[in-house]
Length: 425
Image 1 (spheres, one colour):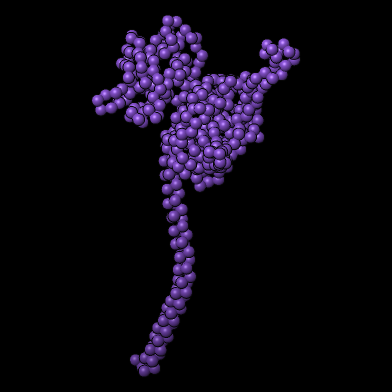
Image 2 (image 1 turned 90 degrees about the vertical axis):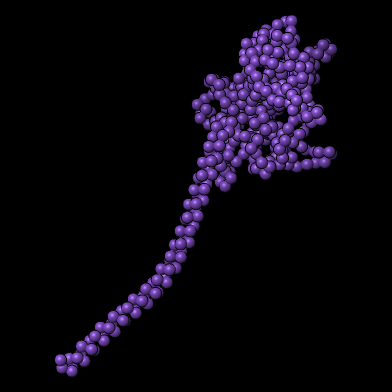
């Protein structure tokens, strides 16, 4: 091959190689610059991806946590809502339809007289006092809509009325009350409620007050100061706080959730929308000093059996009241601690051939509950039995003293018929 052709080939090859190198270099630079930008995009993408992954993980965790909470057992069914990280108005929207304002009128002493004869013979006009409080819907039994409130709110009232969240006011009757635990159940004729009211009310969900921890968030909803429903927020300050109300000792939840006049009988609610207490008291002063944020509520778990009983309570003739056949006295908390005994009704006597004797209950045993309701003294036992017909089977929980201490037992007892020859026992 001629020399010039060889050089031509070498030059062309060099040019091709140069072009290829140049293209490669340009592509490299482009890739480098583009790759750097892409790397920045990728970094943003990774950050987004990390955030998304974290959100997905949090969402999955929250879903699992929510599923766990939603399937947790409670007295009133599944938990309604978790507002621990949400807008609190969601909680209010759910609970408010369950809350009612309660108004009661009680007749006091006669202080208005038309003549001296009225004064001498006590014919004067009785003084009427009106009080406002709160309550909440707990169930429905046929045409009866049932509501819970405090006993001290309605006990001795000549008339009771309730106002629902959307403004409808209805007459209510006292289904039953228990002054010892300060709970009462009211009944409203649901057949008389208009459709708009029925659509705007709901039955409250009952929670587990035993599961509460000090520091848990709580909400009180009620007819504060009689001005209509309002909401206050706080926390559980203490559990099992013993206080004396009207010469009766009660173990209550302490909360710094604000409770004012008119809140009595209303619900104390947890962050799942469940009722965990019934508000009933507050300290204004303590040992002569003014105090703030020391309020109390009845633990709902303790009074659920009582509420259930009051809901299903029906008046029966005295001749049909069942009897157990025991006599006894209260084992107080201090006495129980001193002698290592359970609190309850100490059996000092048992009638022979009585239902209690037939069931194996003997002198020295301590009855602690009847049909799930705590029994502490003879008055409470008589109160429970006064609404149970003879021939009814009841569950009695009692403790008997054995060699290694008191042992708890549960027996089924068919109540006998109360006769005129027997005192009610």
